[in-house]
Amino acid sequence: DTAVSQTPKYLVTQMGNDKSIKCEQNLGHDTMYWYKQDSKKFLKIMFSYNNKELIINETVPNRFSPKSPDKAHLNLHINSLELGDSAVYFCASSQVGTSRLGQFFGPGTRLTVL
Amino acid sequence: AQKVTQAQTEISVVEKEDVTLDCVYETRDTTYYLFWYKQPPSGELVFLIRRNSFDEQNEISGRYSWNFQKSTSSFNFTITASQVVDSAVYFCALSERSFGNEKLTFGTGTRLTIIP
Image (tube, rainbow over all chains, first blue to last red; front, top):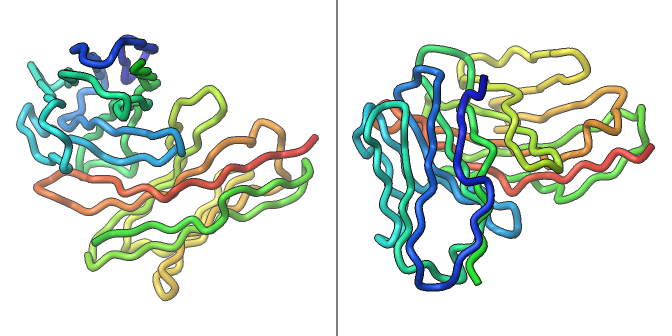
């Protein structure tokens, strides 16, 4: 059973296109996150949602729009893709404050913008 | 502002040697959490440990051990008798609480290579 899943795993697209990445978790967690990992492996949070409400938005261009239809899903839509958007995007989930476990990450989506 | 420093960019050791990965953090919060994650060549992020700021007991899990010292703001990770499968990038992370969320601030990672 996959705990946090993302689709697609790889995404290659042209500059200017619009694309979406989907994330689903089956852990019953109440909080979900998007992180971006750049080519130097640096990981930075982009967004977090708690019970479908946006909690954290870390100075991300408004071309990036997260959407959480329910607690188990957090999708990321990107408009007008730019070369600098090429990265690996990780979705994560957690149940805040109730366990000693950390955030569980999905397998990542490698986005390449040509 | 929170900050996590992993000064060791890359480390190489011969198999079966012990290796320690350093992590130093900065935060103004009195309650915070520290984490280690492993990212093997396959790319996924694997959770290793979460420790809260009130629990300074060292922890051991098999060949892995963690040394948390608030006095020096460090949370170091030691692998004993290293194996080739330990080759990966290791990230230390710090979280602050923000409206019930845990926002992770990551260090820049340490690439560990175990030489057979």
